[in-house]
Image (cartoon, rainbow, N blue to C red; front, side):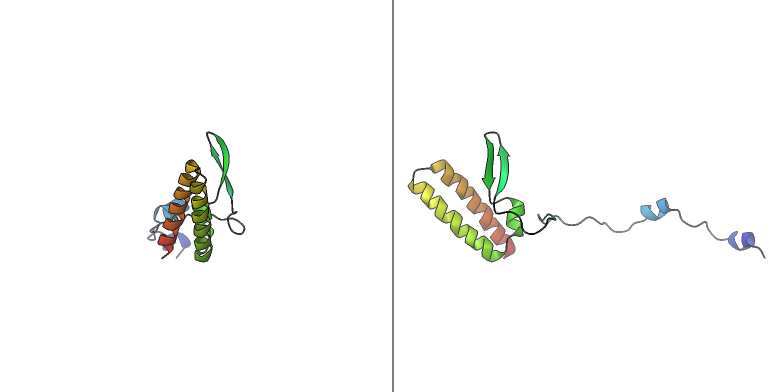
Length: 112
């Protein structure tokens, strides 16, 4: 009995392409809003707009990297800044801060 006789009845071994085509599960990860980086997200990040660059503190990456106590402290800071801007009649700034407050509240609600 030779090697040719033994392998005559066996199917040929699968190729790499055949193995890849038969993957039964997806390897995609769920989107959590977190990105890989060293340490936490910076406190303020630049945001490019039509008017120029502004610094923001409530991007999805920043909020996802904060802990619940940090988010609560940030909520208190934004709320105080919004009240101060409204008292000084800076209504556009107060509206922007209100939007930041909504983003922080949404992240806190997502965590609880």
